[in-house]
Structure formats: C-alpha cells, structure tokens
Length: 324
Image 1: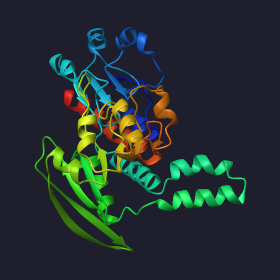
Image 2 (image 1 turned 180 degrees about the vertical axis):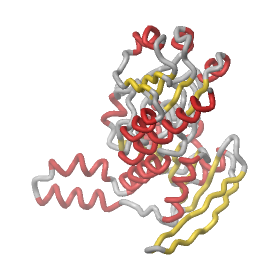
Image 3 (image 1 turned 180 degrees about the horizontal axis):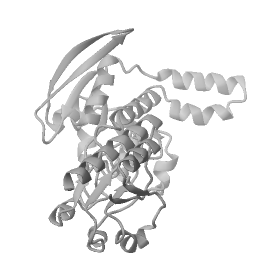
Image 4 (image 1 turned 90 degrees about the vertical axis):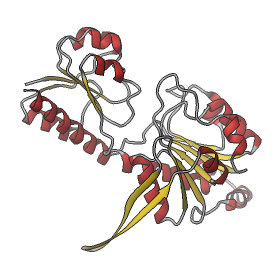
C-alpha cells in the first residue's frame, strides 16, 4: 500500500481506482512552502499545474517514488532531477487532447466572427443607431472553411486540432522540430456505422508554416528558461491579418511582441488561454479588444478531468504493482 498526496486534487473516479487498490489518498492541499515537510510522509505526489515539485522538494522526501502530473506539460516538475534520483515521473498525454482542441476552435470561431469583442459591446447597445453600427462592424467576419491552419506541434493535441480542422474543410500545415511525418485517422459516425479516412502530412519548416497560414495555433512544451518561439521576427514573416492561438504554455509567444503586432494590424486577433503572469497582470493583454481570453482552462472540462483522473490512477496502480 502506498500513501499518495493528490495535492491539486483528483477526480472521484481516479481516487476510487487508487483506493480500490488499497492505496491511501490524501487530497488536503499542502501549501508550496510546507511541501518539504509534508512529502516526508508520502510515497507519491500527484499534481496538476499549481504545485511545483522541484529539486529541494525531492531531496526532502526520502520515501518519494513517484510523481504524477495530471495533464501534459511537466514544466512544474524537475523531471531530469527526478530521474537522477530514481523517482518515476508520469503524466496523462491522451486524456485532455479533445478538450484542448475544442477550446482552440471555440477561440477560432470567436475570433473569426468577432464574438469576443461583440460580447463586450452588445450590453451597451441601447439604441437602433448603436445596434446598426455594431451590425455593420461585425459583418466583416470570415469563414474558417478554406482557410489554412498552421499547427506548431504534432503531438496528440496537435493531431486532435487537425482532425477538427479537416472536418471543417480547412487546409492544414504542420511544423514539429522532432517529427517529419504526421499520420492519423479521421472517423465519421452515423448511427451504428462508422467510416475512417487516413490522413498524412509532411511537416514543413517553421518559416514555411508562418508564411502560409491564415491562423496559427501552438501545441508544444515550453521548458523553463526557453526563449519564445514567436517574437517580432516571426510576426514579420506572417501573413498580414493572421490570427494566433496559444493554449499551450505562457512564454511560447512573446506577449510584448504580440501586443505590438496587434497594434500595428499585422495580427488581426489573438486568443490566449495562458499568460506570462497568472493571475493576469498584463493590463494591455487584459484590456485589448483584439484578444480573446480564457483563464487557463484548456484541459479543464468535466470529461477531461475524469479521463485524466482515471489515466493517472491506472498508471500509479501499475507502477506500485510492478514495484513489488
């Protein structure tokens, strides 16, 4: 039996799996500054994005054997150091892909039809003149069908985004620094019958993606200390009027350079689910009329949280079973 600290919580379905395997699960939140003392009593810690598991935390935890990340990115965990100490690290790459991809398209549709701005303006629309003015302003929206979507990152989330884009009739361009070819199946269901279409793409250079895309969405990890992938230089080679989405990690896109590109008109609109300061401290980002925002909820749907809890719990159970 292992004693497990689920410091950022765990879905009830996942907790049930762990307890059925006779593991003790503690879900009471331990503050970051108290984590060193608390971890002395645990065999495993499960986190989301809030809790940091750093070198000093591991050094203070002689019994720690496993760190579990409920989600994809592991920049809040010193993974290499954990490996050096013989501590296993697992995450849940499959569970949240659909939810993140759907949020990407929620933002894409919002930007294409200016919903982020019209939702701010409509409560002040108290006359026929104002209504007609807004109607004229927001009738300049575009369709996504036929547009080119550049996807930076060909992992599970990038592929989930591509499936939706293909279903909408968008053109798709992939770039991935570690992958050459991207293949996946697109499934269609009607009643009890289903049909599959196999799709294959060849990744292109980042430059080719940026120059050829009407919209760009980012789905790559971003380790601490890494330089932004998209800065003034990259904005300079994009199409005029491009739209940009970041549901990956803060810092992948330079916020200051993004604001300048939005103000110049180079970028027509941007959608951000992650921010360099959370809570959102950048006043220009917070108030910009061309930015659609959400509070870091990419993988936070009911369905995803249940899948994440189950996937993580199953990995934890398997780890301790094999440890015997």
